Image 1: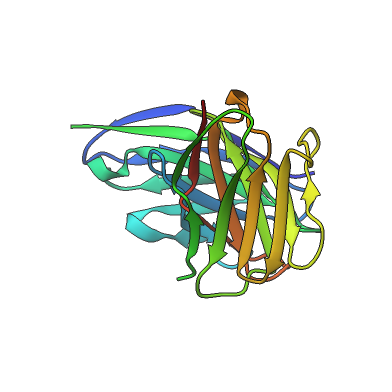
Image 2: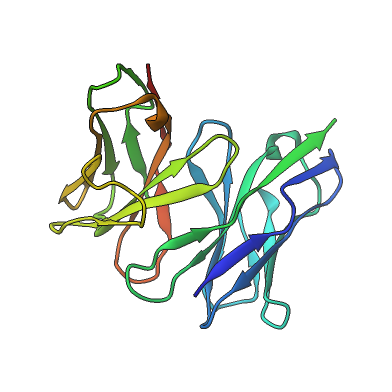
Length: 114
Length: 116
């Protein structure tokens, strides 16, 4: 069975400093992994996805994530935080059979300090 | 990119009434749509998966008679909350996928339901 664990429920960074949001996954097969961002009372926007191509995935708004099979991790990073990055971030793994459901992590709330 | 439109964005209804939420894929055909519920400051909980032209598959613990899902066409799925109660108040989000295979899903903007 697939699962994801987001290791931090809250992360605070200062504007202009790096962002690291951690995600570990569990999957019996080669997983498809996603990071989504949600602003308050809004739907989810896809930041980036890994689907067994390049292990370093570049997404929108300067975010990127590296798939590390040996560590079963898919951490999200950004070199320099912006105030507009403050939001909830979800790491997601897709099941590998059936209806290919999304399994969500518990989310990490990112706070950016001025 | 693919756009999923969810309507209404906010709805207030009285206890005992029913409310319908629509989810439309605007520029693609969605063979599969998903309905989620999100409680405040929590993650998304999958309620059901619907494939066009067939009955929805509900997750364990979700009352299918209370949350009616219809996926009548390749661009529209509806969620009807029947006989709503205050505990049904929540944020409901739909997503749509183009193919049954493992491709990304696109999310609607969500519906805030308040039952008074």
